[in-house]
Length: 256
Image (cartoon, rainbow, N blue to C red; front, side, top):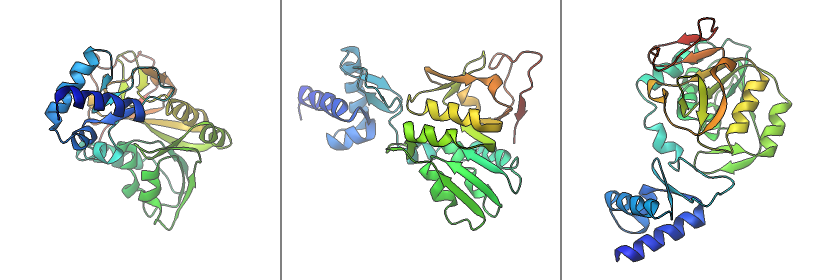
């Protein structure tokens, strides 16, 4: 396929789907991922697509852009080693009888194996969490309804937000795409931000899971200040340059 034809096809695919991963484009156009990345860089320079981590999205102001078009399974491959240890540390905060909420995200979903055998109630909009805990005899699952976000296997939208407002949980565990040094917790997906804010509103204790790569990480949407959280679970204690906490901060920083 000629370069110009391939690039026109890429633009059409991005506009049709809203966002497309590099791997999907490479398969569709029988090209290497390196070739697709070069195409995307040129198309982004021309203003025809917007380059994002892992792929490209439509720059024309889609109401629900997908800034990170990688599928959950692709991101989950990174949820090993330190992230698994973080998940175990977070799960250790849960007591039998607790009602907890689990956000979307691979690190939060990695908590599931450490919750098996616990007598708890779990509220979630993550299908990965549902799959991870569906066979647990003592775990009662409350699955929030909503519109399916296929890329990440999460449920979003007004129905999800309405359901959250009817609940109260002992602990909520959230993920993030980045934390600025001033403590601003960020995300990259507009449809997920109201869900995260809703989880903070219904939780007695809120815990944020973020490895050192999330300091500062990425993101252009503000979820909440870090002061809204009671705990931060990370793989190593952040430096003052990475996270400038005020002297009177009550944030508990937990590491494996």
